[in-house]
Length: 195
Image 1 (spheres, rainbow, N blue to C red):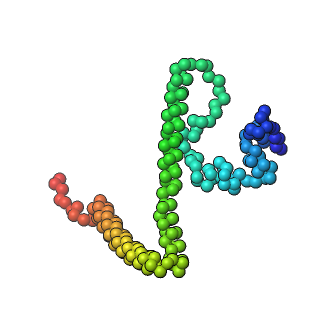
Image 2 (cartoon, rainbow, N blue to C red):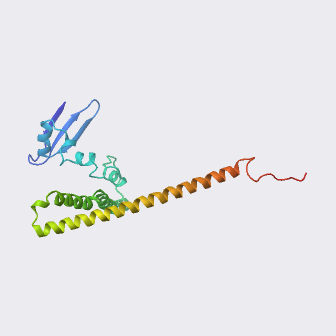
Image 3 (tube, rainbow, N blue to C red):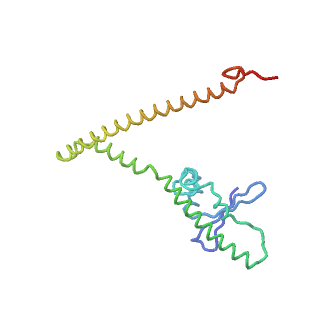
């Protein structure tokens, strides 16, 4: 059962209460979200909601700085030193969170330039008939040069892979020799012992 209640300011956010078996869960939401909720839309499928962004990996969900923002409904006696250290900690946590969010965004956007460039190249290759004749020749030349470069890079990659495989085989042979030395009865372990 859901019960809706408006806040003091009608234009502000509204609060809805989902009555569960043992506890009431209170959440506040905007008018737009309330309308979507009334239409029984799933917030994880609406691209502008926080739950969508978290579910699709567009925002940080697992981070220690996020737990500091949680409310703690435990009364604490006023202490001037505690307040000062808390304010310093809040500032430091916000700095750390901002830094981690920037790094998260950079990691998420890492391959976009290459993907966009590849899409542009594909668009030019498919629609060369729309280009003026002078630019058509230049575009064909560029595409041929890039394909040659890619072939050279592929050949280099194959050579590097073969070298890595040879190194792995050499390491496995060395490990096998070491194991063989450790096994009794094989190898140069026959020694005469003076009694």
